[in-house]
Length: 215
Length: 339
Picture 1: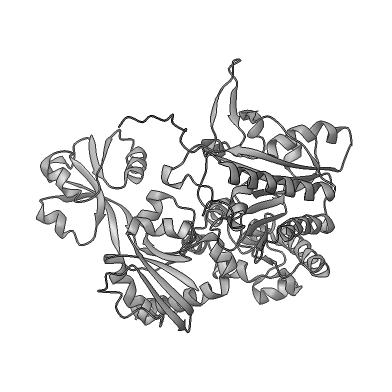
Picture 2 (picture 1 turned 30 degrees about the horizontal axis):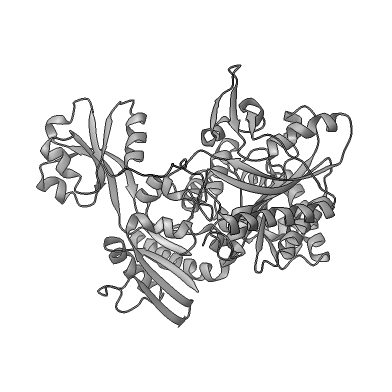
């Protein structure tokens, strides 16, 4: 059996269409059920079990080997440094890690930064030679800049709509983020054949998409 | 909140009666197995000088060590593994020509606490854990490597641990192969780091950028020394014998093919496979490198490799090969450790 950890919410929405195109069976009720574990027996990919977890927890489930593979954003992989294999760039869930703030602060010296990526933010500002105080928050990061807790935020930007709605602008684009297929180190070695079937099916879809884009 | 009990330091684990006895039994069982196969137990203190630990290793490794200064002002650290201590202890004997040396050990080793949520034995990064292993100094060749892998398999079999899989790579082959594929020498090191980290997406992107014309990861994974074919046949027309690195890759490949033959002769091919995309980040490895996996444990239960270059850093040149088991992960695999 192959256990697959997916992130509840956005990642699952982005990833499930890809999964369906690759012909990997997905439980019919995964979108609207409140269950967290779904099992599918006897698929062409063997028995499959899906886990729905919080995005940041996906690599944890995979590192400990309770999930063999998982799908998670590159931002989380970089921030938490879990010991897993990163097998495929799925290209979905595309967004950017950005520094943003109110336009008046665009050219001021960075002093305080709000983020849920303290490690990446620290690395970034060190690379800029800037000495900043990092304020770690767990959500609605924009609020910090709107209310003046910090003059900058370091956060994921997808469409930019939330920034615009709050009168914030992007100062710098730090990193492109897409969803990645990750695998447990032990599963990758001991269940290689099962795992490769899923990887090959996804790779075929991704190659097809690239082909279309080129046309 | 006031607590009536005394605190246990972050990352330390208390072990209660049943579990402590099981761990001792496991250590004793493995040591006895190694001793029956000609390895004598040694032991050393938990502290080593940092400059001694850093011989043959990049200084970046020290970031993970628990370090401070002794009374004379020299930097010391709790040993991160036993190999440096064994090399330090063996070098004077090697210098006097007393080889081969075959030693085994069961010792606690230490790393700085990581993310508290990951400080666990089963798959995370504990602060203190137990390694039980062997080092075999002064001999090289297919038979020695094969015997070492056989010892590792035999030890697992003696524990009645089912379904283990050992994956073997080669520290000399992989870089030479990348170079022979047309990747500039200064691009090879970052690519090896990506392989060691397991960032295969990064590896593919960087390899393509560095001039590889095929999927190097798939090419490395597909090469199987058990087939016994010549490298040039395995790679079809793409292999140029005169490319830089090609000769070194050929030599390492021949070593791997004869190791595969030896493993088959000894009936070990079922539990051992090759994957030349497997790479470990310690620069002193020169030959085979391997990781051992057991069902139900998310991280390797053992590691090993050949490090012919390390002893020279300790004052006496000699080839060496060794491996160690992670005792607490083995206990998990045996269904007796932490769940």
